[in-house]
Structures are given as structure tokens and as C-alpha cells.
Image (cartoon, rainbow over the protein chains, first blue to last red):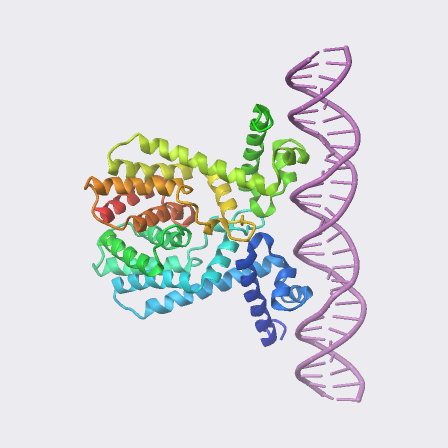
Length: 198
Length: 198
DNA sequence: TAGTTGTTTGACTGATCAATCAAATTATAA
DNA sequence: TTATAATTTGATTGATCAGTCAAACAACTA
């Protein structure tokens, strides 16, 4: 009975998580507090402690929520395609589209990943997730492998190319100086990646 | 007299900055405090306030210090070469080498960039530096332009390629899962970038 | 109805921290 | 030497915050 999450508990937790995302986007991890999340969610501070074991728990569950959302968005679009090159192109397009349409989510994700550390002070961004953890990386690797096995892609180092493509996608968020909009960047990236892998 | 930074003031500030870098690497931006920096530097807390206007000032000056150090390291090596392709390869090699040999510096840099925000809460990582600010990006763009003008490189969108290469370099730090060491990754990246730009 | 469980409030506690400041110490100059 | 300025200390202050808890409230049960 007690370990089946009640409906009200589930929605309440989601309400708190979405409030946390908004506050993270507005003032960042450094200045976030349970009081500010509570105010945004229009509840009392005690209620957060009732539904979560602590601030760290809120942040961890928010991180998990954000990773899931992004993966669902991109994976769904990728599965629409079957051919490796189409999938790869869709992966790139969908990733950049998500950045554009879910900006607050991406900022909140960055805030957590780059601020949170495990108990022994290892930053989250340096923790090697047990392979399955980084869902997007796994998806991209699978696409590349599929392309090589079907001889559509040339021979190349899959881990290296995966890192390059993931980096190219992440970096777009930070290179604000350039006036390149997401669609244009996606086109260029698809063209350049194509040259790289064939 | 008073606006000429005294020698003792300069070395003291550098002592505080290097202590801050160590503490940032050990426990991160979230848990840093003036008391911890003071303890690491073996001085009193008041002395930090004497040489800096506040905690934010310490972090800003530390960030500036770290950016300068990295740029000096990479630019020096790039200037050893003259041909555009050699310069590009050296840029890639030196960037990845710096990550390997100055890991604490890179972690401290990440901690500041991804945690600090301006007074109006804009995160540092989204602030568009006035072109000259991002020295490394400017250096990379100049190399690519030089290569295109001398017809060594093909025609491509310079801003897009710049972002891709910068992303590929940054991402290496975060894709810990792969066993690829920095030298191997540098080789692969050079090879793949070559395919991309010719 | 009354009892029970689950949910919510908000004041409170103890801890941490940035910044201050009076006093002490050291360096420099006259 | 003495006076003046620069540097350094560390206790203190005021503010913020995470987490607690007694009490109130709501939903459900029998």
C-alpha cells in the first residue's frame, strides 16, 4: 500500500519538479532554495520535505525527469525513420529542435548536471554512467553501427564520431555569438557529418 | 600610488586565485566559501576581502585567470606552425593536451562558467562575449579563414565548422565512458575534421 | 457518525556563510 | 628613532537556508 505511489503524490511531485525547473531557469542552481521552489509551486516548504527526502532528492529527480523528456522527444522522431542516414539526420534535427523548443528544460538540465556532486564530491558531469545511463549516446551509437553494418557509412571510429556529433549539438547552445539559427546549423551539421562518415 | 597594483598585492591575489582553483576542483562552486579558500591559502578570511571586493570578484578574476592561461598555452603552440592545416591540427592537439595536463584548471573553469550568473541572473555560459572575448574561438576562426583564402581548405560555413570543432574538443572531457585516451581522440578528430573541410 | 490515514501548513531550529571592523602586525619613510 | 601607511587577523554580525514538527485539514472507511 505505502510503496505504491499514490496518484496525488505523483502529481504533487511532478508539480514540484516543474516548479524547480522554472526556478532553475530563472535564478540558477546557486540561488535555488526549497523556499523559492515552494513559492513558485504555491505550496509550503514542509510539503516538499513530505514528498522528497531533501533538496538533493528534488534535484536528482528533476534531473531524471529532464533526461527522460529529452530522450522521449528525440527517440520518438528517430524511430519514424528506418534508413541509417535518415535516422542520423533526424537525430541531429530533433536534438537541435529540442534545444530551441525546450530551452528552459535544457537550461535546468545544465544547471543540475554542472552543479551537483556525489557525496564524495565527484561532479555529475564526470561520473561515468553505466553505459545504459546515457540513453542519447547509446541511440546515436546504434544508428552509426547500423549504418556501418549496412555498408551505407564508411569505416570510422564509432566512439570518436559519437563524441564529435554530441559535442557539435551541445556546443550550439553555447556559441551564442553566431547568428546561425538552429535550422541553418542543423543543415550545415548534417552536410558536414555526411562528409565525415562517407 | 594606490591604483598601481603593489607587488605584494599582485602575488597575494594570485595566491588566493590558485587556492580558489584547488578548492573549486575539490568540492565545486556550490560548496566553496571564502573560509575554505582562506584555509587552503593559509590566510584569514578578512584578507580575501581586503584584496577582493567580494566572493563574486574572486570568482570573476579566477575565471579571467583560467581563460588567459588556456589561451596562452594553445596560442603559443599554434604560432609555432605556419601552414593552415598544421595550425588546425596543432589547435586540436594542444586543446586536448591542455585538458589532459591541466585538468584541475579545466574543472575550475567549468565550475565557474556553469555556476556564475550576472546581476540580472543571466548565466555566464549564455552571455555573448563581444567577439574578442572568446579568444579561442577567434583563433580557430582565423585559422579556418586562412585555410580557405589560401585554397587549402574547401568552401564551408566557417561559423558552423568552428562550433563543431569547439564542441568536439569540449565534449571529450564529458564522454568519460569511452576508453579513448586524449592522443587517440586527437588523431581521430584530426582525420575526421580533415574529411570535413577538404 | 466517528475513527483512521494521508496530506498540508508555517513557525522554528541550528547551521553556514559573506562581509565587517577594531586591533595587531609589518613595512616604509622621514 | 618615530610616524605613517599598508597589510593581516579573527571574532562578530546579520542574513539565508535545509530540514523538523506539532497542529490543522481533507479524504476515505466502516
